[in-house]
Image (cartoon, rainbow, N blue to C red):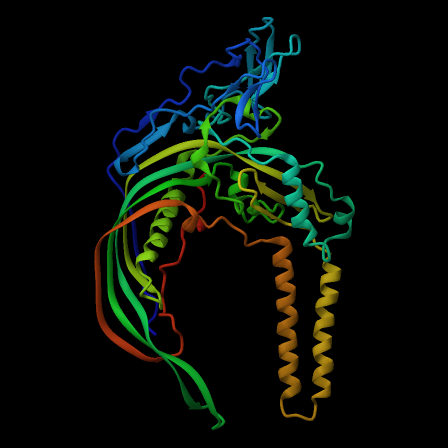
Length: 483
């Protein structure tokens, strides 16, 4: 097959007009969020009712939505940003002082730890609702939909399937009583894009078996393929809805050897279409983290992820090319983008193993999707792995009277034992777990132009896939954030 050609990849954005800013904290006051019926400030979110409820008079409130965002993404042009995604002022004070409307006392809230607190005199609940310059307050919040007991069951079930090779100290200390409900910060990106891709596609015309002689003159059978090759071009329009990106440096660092943060990313996607206007009342009883990433830090990464979504969406129109497509030109244009900040809910279990590695088991508090990392008993794993290899060595010894059999069996035993080890580490650590944003992000695709011209046929190919096929590659995942 031909060598892989370098892809002419180009992401273009329309000449930037002045950024449109949507104010999402209008008519919001910091301090008490009082019930309009009785005036009480003790208003919290009820998971079962899916509403804010006054804990004094039981009045229920429907969630609010933010206004001013473009709903029809085909009309999205230029850059739209909410006030919740403005750049973080590193000098902004994390400590905010609010005046209690109930008794007049001044109450201090450290936004690094929480955005709400109780007045120590009259017990009124005070909160930060408007966007402040340290990234503590988002535009939207997706309320918890899974109760703690249900999350505990998910985590217990996940860990129970990983007991045999779990570290003995972990098994002794494991309990789900200490799991925490946490709101993590994310950026949601809508986009209106178009693309012009050109390259070469392959289709298996025939699959058959041939007989060849090896270096020893022995006959061997081999499966080969005749592949029809085509010049392929696609022009398309695509709207992308709620590409979800972590806005915490810690969570974006999925290669951290001391933390298994990648498993938190892997529980996506969330049903972000059900996000509501942020109110600190939703956070009562839960922990939260602040956004510490600006758009400028991840804009390049996001643009490449948008192109990944477009590239993979196009595969639905390329099913004929079962040998893959090698795109050598990708002209991807972003005509409009819309940025919104959101808090998304996670139930989180954490455990630090004897090697000081922090393991997590995370549960999507909307869908129940669970992923985690369990510390391993490496001594037991290596013992079983070596025993498997020894078993194959014993079998090889009994096959000593057959030519080459002992060598073949020994090699097979080595491969089997190493594969066993790798599979177990993968199951317990889940280092490769990730959110497949390129497949799971909502989108609408319209192909506006197709070119499929047969050029020639390659015969007796040893692989059914063309060299350089890149229609399923991703680039955004490997783009580092900028400082």
